Amino acid sequence: MNWFAVYTKPKSESNVTELLRGAGIEVLGPKLIIKRLRGGRVAELEEPFFPCYIFSRFDPVEKLKLVSYTRGVRYVLGLGQPIPVPDYLIAALKGRMDGEYVRIEPPEFRTGQEIIIGQGLFKGVSGIFERYTHSSERVLVLLKEMGWKLEVESWQVSAGKALGVEIRI
Image (cartoon, rainbow, N blue to C red):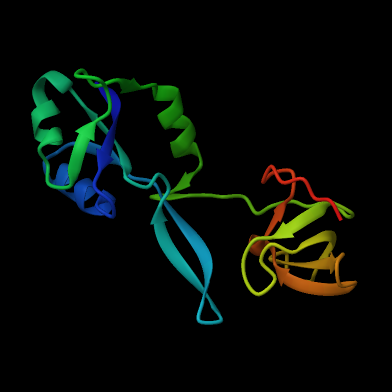
């Protein structure tokens, strides 16, 4: 049996996963815990790692119709014939998972590295990474435009080059 990518309706990944599992079909629906600012507070939210996609392992001769007509499924990827997802890709994904959640390694910054604040009050402001604070989840950033040192959550900061943004000041 092969793995296949199943395209779902928006926000239907969890429901489709449960329905297919209930039908005895192996499903991989990786999720991600993300941090967002909500009302001035940091909230942890659960989101699908691949919005509108899950992976399902089945024999297309026997189960394609069942999968395709499951409530919340738009289609199985492939033009008329489903295209298998290579096992090594599924294994690599599973290797980065704890249970049903994908582990995302916190960003590692170097002293002097140019960064961009991606969320919060200073969103879009560039700066220079100075150091990690007592907690590895917080970093000290020198805001170049203002000459301030600011302590922010590391998940709010991205390396400028990683975003494909050229910083000119």
